[in-house]
Length: 418
Image (cartoon, rainbow, N blue to C red; front, top):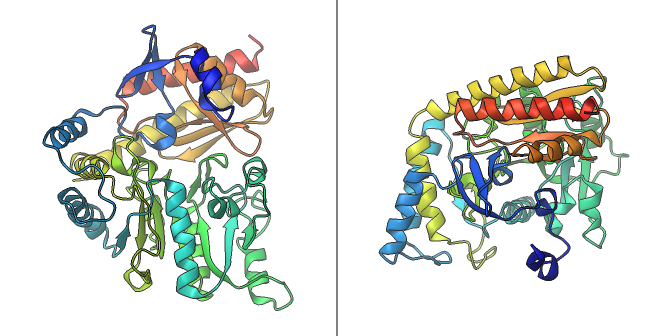
């Protein structure tokens, strides 16, 4: 591994927690160069919702490449992009009675967020944004301006302005009525709040600590935005594409955001791809006003199209994710009940789940103990106090049980001092 230490930047992160050289992967497992197997409860930070190298998607991708299909297309019309748009409209948007125009920004979630913020400002003519405590929206300057984590914000090197944080759901442990402060500063002419163009929110905060917003809170936020003529942006980069069960994480709340950002698992294969969904009346971009060299990554269109055909032609996957999520919740509740030496809190929705440790440093120790036992997990939260799992949605029940047993064993080993 000296080549990485000698040549690669000190900014590298995940590899420090998992110091092996990975070589192959299939489904919910990876193998290192020595043939050791690792069960994956990380799934590319949510970019591999269907696991590693899913066969139907790989088949379509190899067929496309073997016939010299367009790889790089900017925003040119291509058969691959046309098929994706047709399939997305027919199988994702139409069944949900959603009417959105589709923008392809640069191929990352952060770029989708940057596009959404720029567009909201262009639509409204206003500069200010409202974000939420413990939010994470990306590492570029605009996305960082609406991100909560102080370490990540500090990396910007300049003041991050034009955004005001509001309390996320349950930030005050249920002791303060929803939106009390938000409503007050919006209506008080002495509050100094700049009139916001938009509110940006995650329905479940992933990097912020697996914090799920209640359905009624999301509905209340949508109502507040409507009453005050504020655009609502839902960042579904990590929690979309089935992570919470439905394709869009906001479906359960019955709301229709003005703008939606999608990335990570939309290609279905771990290939770079991102979307910005825009209500038609808000599609006020001029040609080329936001662009990117790799916004037309056609192999991702191919796998993204096949992923929709394979997994979203009916509600089978959605129901399975909800069922598996309940299985994880039961397992985590047992761990919480069995752990006597520290306070644990089980959190999450669907297959985005976490265990929050009162002794914050223990979360990282549990992840390290799990890695020693052949399981990949990461931490999240402002103090890395949450042990977070994002297993592939297609993980088998046996694999899920195997991983949950490792989690329980690792928690016990760390909290009991064993």
